[in-house]
Image 1 (tube, rainbow, N blue to C red):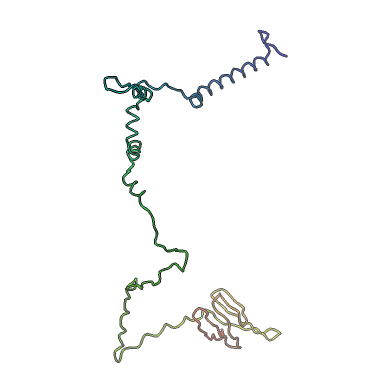
Image 2 (cartoon, one colour):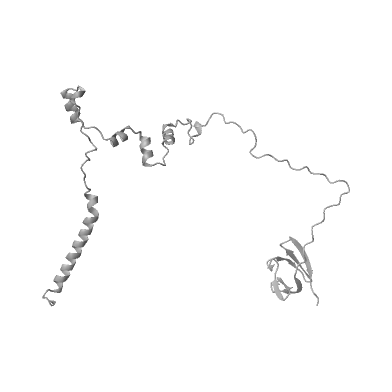
Length: 228
């Protein structure tokens, strides 16, 4: 065990410091919570209740004098609160309240219409039909017939030419034909039913021609075999 210059051990010094800190904390808690758990009690003011005795000059009997002496009279503050209506008291406590309007709403009684909105049998016997449509009906403009000798409508534009070139055909050992198609610098080898460039479908392959369907315009064109 180590001791200091005065001969007191370090353990005793630590214990004393802990005890002092605990006493300080308890003193602070007592100071903060004393008014909460032990509120101060004050004696009623002498002016709050006044003991008034009727004098003998008023002609009161001894019994009336004793009863008036035993019963204290209320203070002016108590009389003011006793004679004040609840609405006036609330208005004094909260001046933003409008007690007149609140009292009117409290006096209202909801009687209902006698109809249950969750039951089909409680609906009225006859539902009135609307007087008119919610939106006005606008008549379509009349169709004016074409006068005699009017020009026919212009024909639709022709579909574009298939952007492929047929330059060769190859026949496999099983008799299936494959066509060599050219688009700019790209070469495609397609059989019947294949789709080229996600747009052109091969319909038929002949020795010197090929039929291509443009699936975008639903148009079929025949491409001849290039001899060069």
